[in-house]
Amino acid sequence: MSADDLTEVNKVDSTLMLDTFTGVEIELQVAGVYIRGVARLIDDVIRFLVVSAMSVLLIPTGLVGIGLASVLGFFIWWTYNVLFEVLNNGVTPGKYYMGLRAVNADGTPIGWINSVIRSTLLVVDFLPFGYLIGIVTMALSRTQQRIGDIVAGTIVVYNRSRNTRKSADIRRASPIPDGLNADDQLLFLSFQERLSDLSPERAIELAETLEPLLGKNGQEAVIEVNAIAQGIRIGT
Image (cartoon, rainbow, N blue to C red; front, side, top):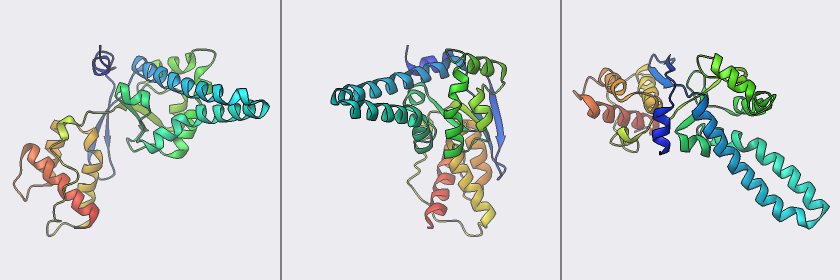
């Protein structure tokens, strides 16, 4: 069974509908205990292999090597999640394989402070063994949040496939239509930023609302709104 199959089988139907500051509604599918556990196991195996390989190289060099291996091992183990989550849009290798990503509770990309908090509090979630507190907390939470998520204000969601959006080429930029004021431009930019979180139907619905002047419908409207947003972003 593939990762995509596992994702479909093990989804917990916990859907969040969020309104952005520009009024654009996004839909997030919150990931449950099992699928997050598999992603965590993959990440733990990767970290263990990296730290083990480093230790094999450094420890035979003597006391200095042992000390260096300990420091680097701790650094890698602790910063692994933070670096991937902040620099890779909330996606660690394990999350990538299972189709997940970590975001702020309002759907925005996770930042350094929140990622550090949720990573540090993994120690609490692990207690007394096997992430027991984290599992119990997630099971009792409608948004499947462990202790670290609650304190940091984060959630883990399914990373929607962008296959249905490939035709909406984000590299293509269209000129900014005449009469588009600053507030209107914010709506276009917000649409582009949230596109991966919108269902295809909702994306079309919003695009047809945002882009009525050019008479586009369906996926063509999505493509054109996205292109105008790109034009706004690069100043065409």
